[in-house]
Image 1 (spheres, rainbow, N blue to C red):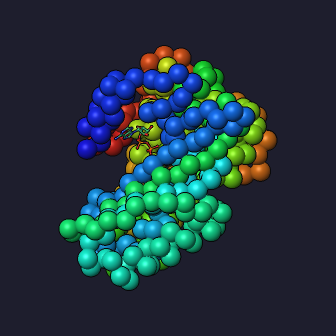
Image 2 (tube, protein in one colour):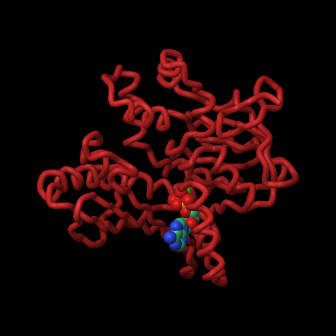
Length: 318
Ligand code: ADP
Ligand code: MG
């Protein structure tokens, strides 16, 4: 319910309005001032049949991903996670081994990032597994990087290759034997890496205008930054970095790696705007994909220096 979902959220926003000093609905996390530091809060849900198939994803993968996507929203603010809360609804046939293995995946990523589970809720469900994770985190007061800070002239960067997760999802749905390259892409779909250290380092430069994580695809997510900041953007499709595995699989399947990179979601790389010199202030690569421009919240897409248009059918030249 892509459009419906955003419409619903807009409606909730009008009912509750805004709260002074608090960043509420509309960014990757809520930002609540707490003296010297701000508290960051985010929550994300995974539903069986919608976000994963129990017949396909391992329970460990679902547990891992339920934490990863939430930590990614803390990373998107340039914050540090404090702890998680897990609410889970389990049907009878998932209450034994499935739930234990789910918790192994959940614990693995929690240990890796040093984020303890602090509470939650457990209930039964008639048929499907439902998982909701909330994460609280922190950043210095006023230090959270919002979606609304993009400045005209800023370069738009991403922290890594795009499209892997979207291709992984397509492959999952094919339910066919997979090559090692295809397994790699499916792995990127189920086990995304939250860019926590990158988010912290980027925020510490003091140069980032706007930042968010890429959960719905650049085409949709950059739109959020543009609307929140009241600016436009020019993006070079050829500049979107794609992995060699994605290129090889797309070559074999006749898929467009560029289109997947621009429009498929769930890569959980960071999307940010900053002056170009930021690349010299961090020790990991940032990939420039375009520039923030004056004007309406529209993305002008370019391919080989030529304007092209993005539609639901993909990219077409004017
Ligand atoms: P993200 O992809 O970063 O998790 P979403 O697209 O899920 O963000 O949500 C966008 C914004 O809308 C967030 O600030 C989120 O907290 C808010 N939001 C989403 N659903 C609801 C809801 N049911 N009630 C209140 N706020 C919501
Ligand atoms: Mg997000």
